[in-house]
Image 1 (tube, rainbow, N blue to C red):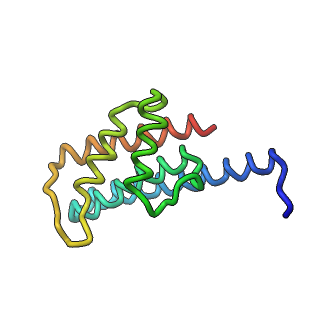
Image 2 (image 1 turned 90 degrees about the vertical axis):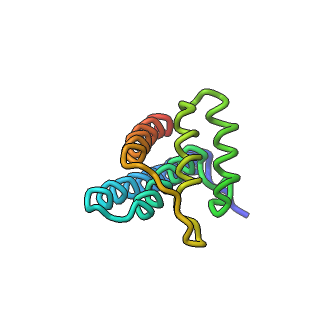
Length: 136
């Protein structure tokens, strides 16, 4: 079984980080557009969650955790990055809040104020920027 050089592996990891950061920015832009159009808050929150989640995956170099296990991934992020002081605790608080309030498969919704949505959008923007700096 052939393995790539360490440099090739490092480059692949950087490419994966960039893809996830691009996905995070796209999800954030979609959330902002939906909010501007007056769409249902549930759609905004779902996109906002993915803005945070893709950023987390970028910082964790994906592959280390199955992306389908969102709560486990978020918990590992808390342990490895928040407790270690790499990122601000308010990012963890925001992702936990969005994870809690985004619409569930059952259709259950939690009411969220416009002010809170705007605060979460601002935190997502900051988190993506900080993660980009961390990943480069």
